[in-house]
Image 1 (cartoon, one colour):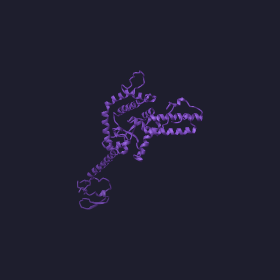
Image 2 (cartoon, helix red, strand yellow; image 1 turned 180 degrees about the horizontal axis):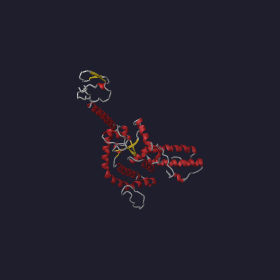
Image 3 (spheres, rainbow, N blue to C red; image 1 turned 45 degrees about the vertical axis):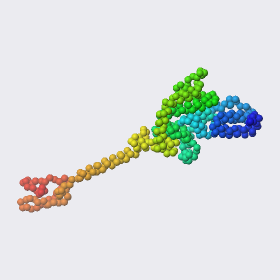
Length: 370
C-alpha cells in the first residue's frame, strides 16, 4: 500500500513524484492505458500535496482535470511516439489534426500541431542516413497515380504497402475505418463519457448516414459508439472491395519502380516529369525538356547545309572566249584595213564593260569582231 501523500515530507513527495512519472511511462510503453490513467491520477495528487507542503496552498480543484481548455499539456513521451500511438489506434493514414484529436481523447497529454510540421522530414533524413536503424518510421502515404507523397497524411513504416497507398476511394474508406476503430475503442469501459471522446465521435457521426440518430434517451449530440460502428461498417462494405483492388495494383507498381526510401516517403515529382516527357507528354507547369532544343538545332544545321548545296549546284558562269584587250588593260594593235594594208597602233580605252565592235563607214570590219 503506498503511503498517503499528505503524510509525506516534501523530499519524500519529490521521490514519490519521480517514481510515479516513471511508472506512467512504463505503463504507456506496455500499452496499459488504464493503469497509466490510475498512476496519472496518483501523480496529480502527489503534486498537489507537494504544492500544499511547500507553498501552503492546496491548489484549485479545477486542476484535477487531465486537460484544460486554456492550453495543451505536454505529453510524457516524445512526439513521434505519441503520433505512433494515435496512428496505431486509427490503423489508416491520417492528417495531423485528426492525430492530435485522437491522442487528446484517449491518451494523457496533447500533441502540439507545430511539433508535427517537420516531423516527417526528420524521419526521412534519419532513414536515408541509417536505413532501418529504428523499429519504425513515421512516413508518408503514397498516391496511387504518381506514387508520390500524399499531402498532409502520416503513416507508419511497419504497415503493409497496400495500407499506406491512397487511391481515389481511399479517403472515404479510411474515414469509415477510423470511425469504426474509434467507436470500438470508445465502447470499452467508460471512455465514451469523456468530453473529448464525445466530440470526436460526433465529428465522425456527422459525416456518416444513420450514425447521428438521436438515441433512445433523446439527447441531441450524444453518439452511441455501437450505432456509429454499425453505420460505418454498412457503408464500408460498398467501397472496400474496389478500393482494395486499386491499392493492390498501385502497390505492385510501386514495388517494381521505387527503391526502399521511395517506398516509405514517395518518389520525387521531377522524376515523374522525366518519365512523362519520355512518352511524349509533359505535365502542366513542367519545364520544357532538352529534346525539342536539340531538334531545333538540327533543323537550323540542315537549313544551312541545304543552302550551301544549292550554291554549289549553281556555279558562277565563266566565258571561254579570251577577255578583250581593253578589259585586260594593255595596248592592242589592230589593222587599219586601209588600201595599203598598213597597221596603225590603237590603244583601247579602259572600261568595265567591253564596247561593241565598231564598223567602218565603208562597211568593212575593223578587226575586233573576229
